[in-house]
Length: 530
Image 1: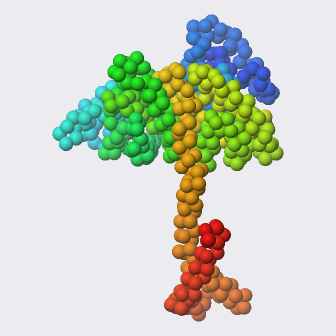
Image 2: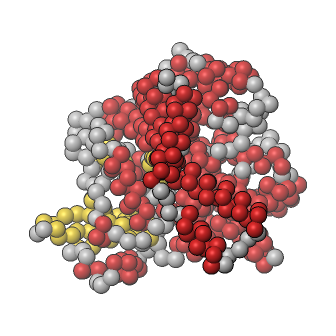
Image 3: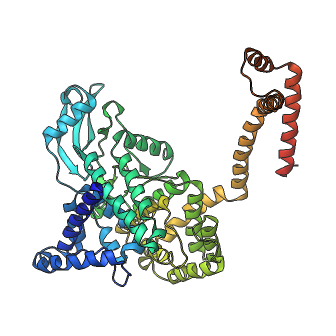
């Protein structure tokens, strides 16, 4: 009960601040349950009294300002809700997409204390120079520093977690869970949207983000995945100066990707850079199943060689093979106008309940895909099409897929970055080679043979273990038979008998291998290789 009261008070405070800024999280025309109607009525006087104040805040920044005032966890929540136009409406979703994770920096004294606790010794033992913060966000801030490696002075970026950030996040997450559970309990139509699962996802990603060793591991994994990729790289890690609350990486002396005119003045092809950003993201998602889930302009630079360099790997996304296939086929289906296949993959992935038909959903997919045909590149938006697809989720009783939440958000962000580099970029044409490449590698006859080969390896492992498995089975059968005759005994004689049976003879091994080979022949016949 005390927890419920505290959570209610925290949510009431959040509601007060949102009302003060004139922010509404329920779109017009959406049915609202009675408790929310009462809460909404209670905020009307606040909105009325705050009207003069609201006029001093630009409408486009009200949401961001309100969430920033509420604290870091609300900033993260806002970034998540930006992906859910079907829940909060397209207008508010569009406003949230512009939410930047910026905060006031904490003091140099606190930064020094954190570094010394994390790495041991004095700050000067690790860095020959340590500058003031150059960027501050809700969870951490970044400093430029210098180290001495083999007599060479080298610039590094040092990321430091905010003091007591874990405690504050956990407190706010409790209130999010409370709200999500109440919504699922008292408003059945919202259950298909899985609000508790959305909070679960937020909790998981922020927990990863608050252990900087995991961020270092993510950079290392992406570096391994992208070694041979053209036009994209990640910073190198300084493992000696990295701990749970401190991360040290190579300092990137590049041009911010948002500075389009500067890039052009340096002779870089911004149209090609836009394609690199988009295709790199899709390649990471589909080929590797591991992608940077916060690729906004502030996290992307272009180095002197023209390589796109990504930074800030606190939020990463993972996709299983089924989700990657879903993404590739949806993109390919819409691009090639194969709406039946694009619809069928929804059913195969279990995203649409079986009481609907593929033909009906293909009709909906056609309603989304056909309007883009014949339109100029500037008029085609992947984000808008995703929004239209989400609009059909209620019609077809589709449940939220938590594993796709970060992907949906990231695709919207990446499209915006690519479009800023090249306003005429046709994102669908740019995406086609990546989707086609993945499908040819995984869904072509050669790809299916490769998949069958992986399955054969698994069968091989089982077959190698078959003699031992058969022997264990034989021992078990013998043991159960004896138990049936004599009952369960654990005297000295029983233990001695069990031990004697465990000594295998050469003849028994031969017999067991004959059984294993027989099973292998049966498996080969079943798979149709002969």
